[in-house]
Image: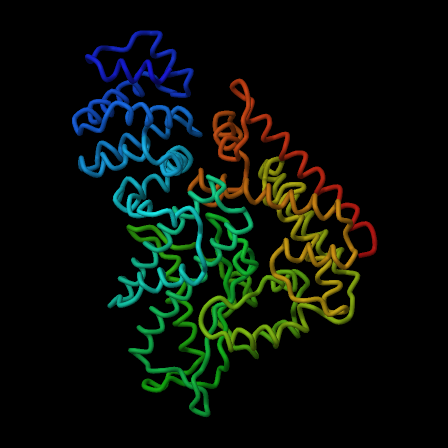
Length: 520
């Protein structure tokens, strides 16, 4: 179909006939007349810049073969028509000469409106990404850290630093999404890289904020004159190095001692570190004209939203020793120092480990975890949700996490298991200890990776934090194609996606029920 249309477009301009419009509609364009007009204009631009007929044909074929031809055409049309001729020519050349780069570009333009907007604003940045083949892998964390340091180094003000962090996050997200959608990198590595990028953004925010505050108050010092330490603790999926594309990040802020003071103004640590914590949160969380870096959630701290935003190590220890609850033990399994002083982070972990992993097995743990599971189920029912909620629905990600955490809370302290924060790493250890059969462990592993893959694609498509499979057939078909699922007919990919989702979640529910109704 497309070779025929492209030959017509590159000939004399004329209105499309009904057969051509029907062909365009069959190819996936929701508004065939609008599609014809945009394709016509792109064809004209191709001729005007002497890009060659084969490049337009390759562009048209790529659009039709994309996840969502209408969205792909809309975004590529804006990118190409708004670009200078030299830039547009280079982009068109990708479609005839660089198939993998063209596929990556088409995946973004058809799968994510939010990431497409970044390309629309700066198409030359896309071309710089494709300068060599290094974009086809994620590289090392050290290389990522160098890029982060290069972007934020030398920023003269807090606002400049915030802008640099947003730029770093935006383009790293684009790179990771391309590698993910093309399956150039395994899902587990994608989750780790998303967490690594968040770690480095938090470290950048610590550096920028500390520089500003120390300029005002001097260096924070302990009573003996030694430097006072401060650390950002990642919780949840960030702590487990298994972050989503649009995750909130759960944080705790900890410092060495409340008895220190700053070297210039004499501000107490109890006053200084809440200021620093709020400044870091602002650097990451505030919405500017460039967007935000991450949404920050601080409600896991002692006393939740009513508690101090930052606490000394001894303050955390005192709270958990006196009033700590099982759900807090669950949450703290994921605790990981991610920015600031590693020494302070290690002191925090050492102080809390006896609380998290009690050396006396507590049978009430399973009852509490099950109650939390039931509360989640009731909340989903109240808002008429849950059947296809990838995170919280029956057999979803949360149930795999709860099952894993149940084993960890009961056995880690008693049997001196290692402190595993990642869900898959913990499942592997639990299996090697004989508490799960190989078949069950493999099923949980496969389900977890499928669900996390699905969750990431839901969020790439939505451009915000979302966890539910879309209810309309068109959006589900697009999502299915993003998952690499093929199918015949208007709802073929959609039905295959739902079938695979049900098979995985049914198996998770079965394993969960068996485990939680036997002695761990």
